[in-house]
Each structure stands twice: as C-alpha cells, then as structure tokens.
Length: 187
Image (cartoon, rainbow, N blue to C red; front, side, top):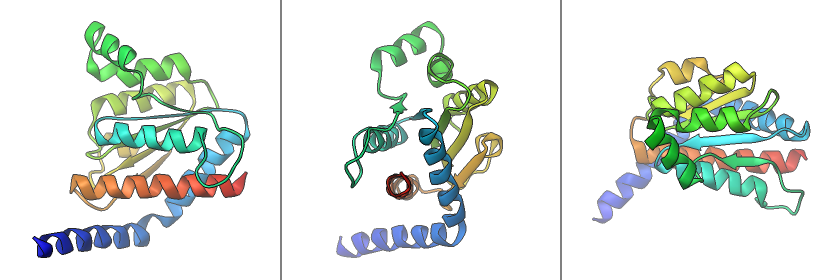
C-alpha cells in the first residue's frame, strides 16, 4: 500500500514537471487574460463536468471571495453551480446545451469563458466555448493530453500532458490556484 501511495505521488510530480516544462507561458497568458477581463469590468464564466465542475466552482469562489489577499470581489460565475438551470436545460433540450445556453444568457462581448474538460472531448464544454466565440468573448480551456476540437478552437489552450484523469484534475486545480494568485498580485 505504501509503495502504491509513493508511486501515485511520484506520478503527480512527473505530470507537474512536464507541465512546468511545457505550459508556464500559457499559464501566465491565462492569468493575464483573466486579469485584463476583470480590470475592464467584465466577468469570467467557468464551466466543466464532474471534477471539472468542482474545479470551476473552486476557481470562481477564489475570485469572488479571496485567494490570499483582501480585495474587491471579482466577477466570476461557475455555470456548473445552478442545478435547476442545468436540469431544466438537460430535460427540455439536451445535456449538450447546458453551458451553451448559459453563456448565451450571461455572456457578452469582452467577457471571458473558461472551459475545463479533462478529456478535452466534452461536447457541452465545446458548445459553450463555441457560443462564447460567437458572442466575441475571450476563450480559454484547460484540458488533458487530447488535442481535439476544444483545444483547437479556444483563444488559449492549456494542455496537461497526461491522459490520467486524476493527474489532469490535480494539475487543473494547481493552475487555478496559480492564476488566482497572479490575478490578486496584478490588481
């Protein structure tokens, strides 16, 4: 059991080292994109499924509340948080449109959409980003190793170099924390 624990921690470290080698510049770009958005009085819409939904809630909470410093609340909305809206849209339309419809309702030119998909294949996240593009919002995505449509369409794509869902999710929340800290330091 202890060997398994050590192996899992080592795997996480290896993924983070690969992230360090390949994505530092993109993480900086994400922080600057988000900082510019809120400095201009616009909002950030964040969304994903499952663990990525939890990450969207976590990142939005750090921005609206505080990360490490006392400061003005920042406009961030986790589209994964409103169960009645999600279930109504899934029931009345399809689960594929749950983020697209919310982006349409809440987003405007100058706002930013941050889609999170461990697989990079989540159809509802893709459609949410596509709607944001049509509205002329800034777009960014956090994905795993797969570089499909979601990775290609966003203004900025940060790809965690792993196909192992837990390791990708651990890196996504690390990226979220880094970005929140950089935003606070930039205000």
